[in-house]
Amino acid sequence: MIRYTLACDAGHDFESWFPSSASYDEQSARGLVTCPVCASAKVGKALMAPAVARTDRERSRHPATPAVPAPPAESPAVPMIAEPERQMRAMLRAFREQVTRDADDVGGRFPDEARAMHYGEAPVRAIYGEATPQEAKALIEEGIEVIPLPPAPDDRN
View 1: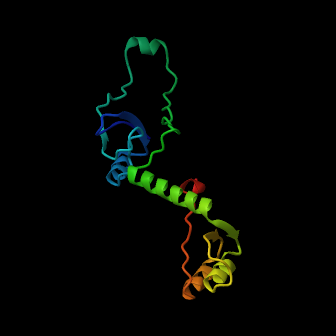
View 2: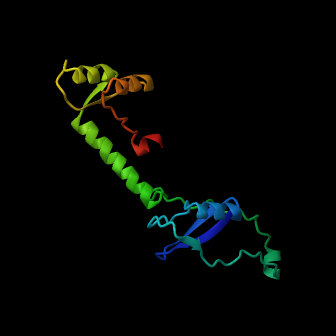
View 3: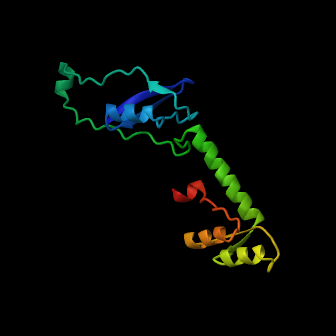
């Protein structure tokens, strides 16, 4: 593992660990290395002092324990995602919250309820629920407008 001291274009310094120099280069080129403070992907390596073992007499009198690299610092309060993804997650979360707040959850009865409203057998209202891919395809083929409700971004973590 390699520990790099990094800095973003806004001047925030931070450290990150990588399996290799090539791994850092690849992740940086893909925009995956972002500042934990401002989420900027414009990050570069900062000047670092190399870790050099001492060989002087004082060191030899007191044998040191083998150096074990410290684990990378974690910052759970600041997710490491880029700003466009952060904005997309916020929009999906807001969309989902509005649907679940303003529509009726009909659960597995969704296909039947949607058909009943489409054919005038039930009052039209906003609903959401569950349907298999085959049921959703059948509704669309009948001319019934449906849209999948994406899972909340944090539901998969």
